[in-house]
Length: 345
Ligand code: NAD
Ligand code: DAU
Image 1 (cartoon, rainbow, N blue to C red):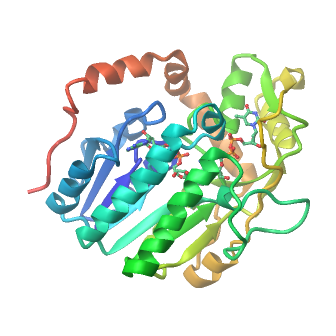
Image 2 (image 1 turned 60 degrees about the vertical axis):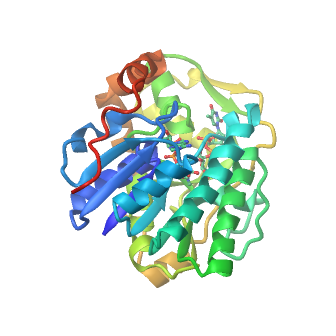
């Protein structure tokens, strides 16, 4: 298959590109990524010279670029990760979330449909469902009730996918996954932020009472779920993906502190996130029964591996936190993307 991955230089996208190339069955993987603050080519150093892989720095909102890539590369399938992904940033400035997540998805859908692409996987999120009380699980039938500007923009994109399937019979598939963790996660998200701060003996900012609940899934398991949906999902299908692993934030931060041998005194309760969703929990029965997917990494080994990865790759996150990597990209890509190897012949 010839696959266009959008957002492949981000956390989940780069893990997915690695997985695709390691599995080795695809002819071509084209990664279209704007390299915003969250995109990082260091995530993909190991595959940069793979002949099946091409990186293109560009914007999913650039219609001409998207159209050219889809046709020049004879793309069979799109796997769409590219997004503004951080809830706190969407509270500070929602506009870019609407622009990238909604308009960007619409442009991709329209161009992919026009180019006759055979499969389009939209990587949506469980945040489209809003927040749960102390009991219950999100199913694919749970009404959408997004609470943050980020979640609302993802819900709009998710519903555009529904509309493209309903109206045009375009083969869109949607995944709605819970919180991921693992290597290459940008150190603004809870787990890498806590690891990096603890290693530098900085305060660990826990929002509100720390009792908000998330369902954590190892990133490799999410990538396998996306790939199962790509290859075997029902066109028009929506699939919840989750780890069956609910944890309170405070409990999770304590585990990280203990694993690193640091003092729990670093934990600092700070002002709550506005509109903070209380609890997410996923019913993933559909993807398990229909597509034979299940999480393979239990939380204890997943978090050990993740903590070890951040210990072993200190330069990766220190460079990001220092801001030096922005200067590097400005230098490397100021001329319009000289790392693009050009279309396949
Ligand atoms: P991320 O922020 O780490 O990566 C996003 C990537 O998209 C970056 O490489 C960025 O450069 C790129 N990008 C942003 N705007 C772009 C644009 N206009 N054109 C091209 N590329 C652009 O995000 P992530 O955590 O890897 O999440 C990937 C996807 O998965 C997102 O759609 C997110 O909503 C979804 N998701 C994330 C989680 C999670 O726990 N992180 C869970 C469920 C769903
Ligand atoms: O559920 C899927 C979603 O998970 C994805 O769609 C989003 O892209 C992804 O960012 C993530 O959203 P969250 O808001 O759940 O993730 P975050 O890592 O920002 O926060 C996790 C929890 O930890 C949340 O309850 C807020 C809390 N938190 C977060 C940070 C950054 C803190 O208490 N302190 C912090 O410093």
